[in-house]
View 1: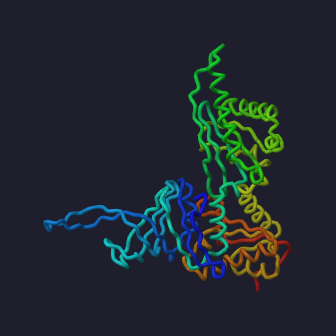
View 2: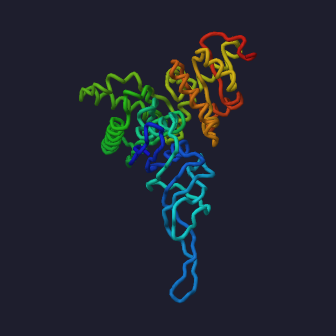
View 3: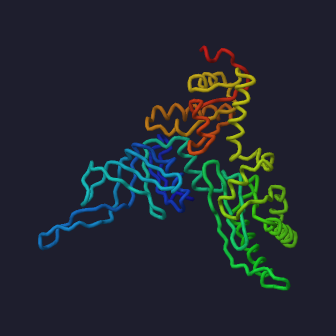
Length: 377
């Protein structure tokens, strides 16, 4: 979903169509955030049909066809990153009648056409982020073990693997030059991928983790090469790199690094950690100075009318509502807070922080100044 193949949206009323291709599993989450009940989704699918042959006998067969359905139900499996859409057929077909129900499972590398009656600001933001995965990824991570490395971009809701490097490394023996040669080639591959994948204009922190001393050895290689080649981009941003020990060198080591108390200070300013910080700031303010914090739509909207919101916290369960008028009021609130120079933090219900915010109705705010009578208004 790194780019929209085709985008035909009328800026006057924001009605229109986009044609996208999911390139990897994580793109399914982006599509999940784009597709809503009532949208028209056109994609290639398969269906069991009864075909009559020349002799008059009827055989059951599975055929491939292109359908356009009006979405009635959306099923997203976060663990498998799979997306299934159930809806009503809105396109004439030889094998399926208009108005008949059908389920489409979105597949990788197959075009999907999505039509909406209104592309609001949140949908447009999701679409723009998906087209440029480096745009909002403020943390990059390089996890490695001997012969295996992954370079990832970490966003608040998902992690994208941008490069996977594999090389056979012979066993280390005294005087064995093949080990050193293979390791240097391995480091060269990671270095080249790092330069391609990481945009330092947006990335604030680069985590490097591995078991043992491999991450330190790689960092020494990076610095030696950057100095030798006068790589000003890397040298200028070297303070963004943080090396740490991990129990293993696979992608799952990223969670280990993000949860490390030793890295809490370094991660304090990045977006993936900002939601957690904003939630704890709300908790602390609500506890120590309750007149400068509120939750629930009515109280938060009242605070916004007085331009009091410094930070708005909102769960995606609210603006993912199937009821467009219900969704619209939350989108309008978010747009208004941004226009008044407040910060908006969108929480995924698939994450622990989103689940915690949902306990407070899914919407809360930390205020610029006390509003003691807001709950009584």
